[in-house]
Image (tube, rainbow, N blue to C red; front, side, top):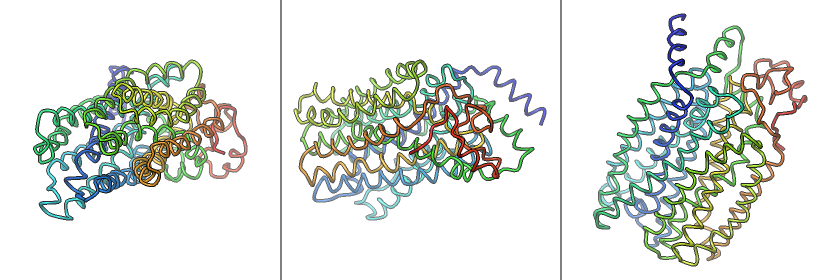
Length: 472
């Protein structure tokens, strides 16, 4: 035990916070590349390769349905991997999630088409998509905690925002890979085998991500929590999180509705809208998304720096208001069919996403104590992904079929923004929270009940501390 502790301490002394943040970003970028590669392929390829139908929109809806399956598996992954992360550690869990994601994505590259084996093709695709979703369910929470539990409150939003660069970077790489492949080969070759190259490349990226994650040490807060756990009898971390912090889980999930639904409309459904509804070239949508992702990559750290100065709530409220307004302007600009207008529409949409993303990591981390933080953060994050993100492309297609206008989709997105706005207004500022004392009884920065003291649950629940964030 002493030897292990000494090795861990020595290792951490040679690991700077930028290196830790960089390793978290590398892992999340790889996982989100894999996850978004599927979504982009669903809009461009899978509707023809795995779900042939007389109506192109019907085939695309079926492809997006399997895309949503990945989201359904994410809460299960959040529960299992979140529990494992709270018991065994953040680092080991992140390594496991990365390997699961990489293997499943690599295997998609070799799936036979519907024309080759019939219904077996989409069934195998659904299974691998479930594995992807399960892996991603435990990824984000661990990546954020690996950074936030190493840092301090003065720059927590900035460092915790690094893993949130993973979604736009992963999406940028996914869209870029497919754009390059579709641009250098014929339509027939791309649909036959070209798209498979992008999925096979996942193996290389996973190896890079694993090397970086193997280098990073476990967080000091988790190690301290483990030492404390030896002298106490505790419930299961997942049960603790649900019983003691369900208000925080719901509140955090609601704050993501505008961000999550908006992200998938602005970056994924937009490709379907431009190619199948407005009949524009595929490259128009892909190029607009790639430009928008660059905007998000640049602005997420800038918004995070601002959040460390003015707090989390002002950023959340501003982003939610912007979502409500831009939901309608977005489709108005798309309908012009003007390339510049389309790029502006997507870029501003992803700029709003960047504002949300800048504060999510810090805010979520500040809601839960160390012993249940992985479980609580992962459950909240993925609950929103299922209720908002997974359904957004499907609802968008259905709304257009019913109303024959993009403004119906805009109204749906505005409602998601209203939900986030209400949650942000109800939430209390958590900027000054000390992660080491969240959940401790008798502290001013307490944000919930002490899960290790079952007999005190009612008393602590009634005592709302000043920096706590509670759901309505």
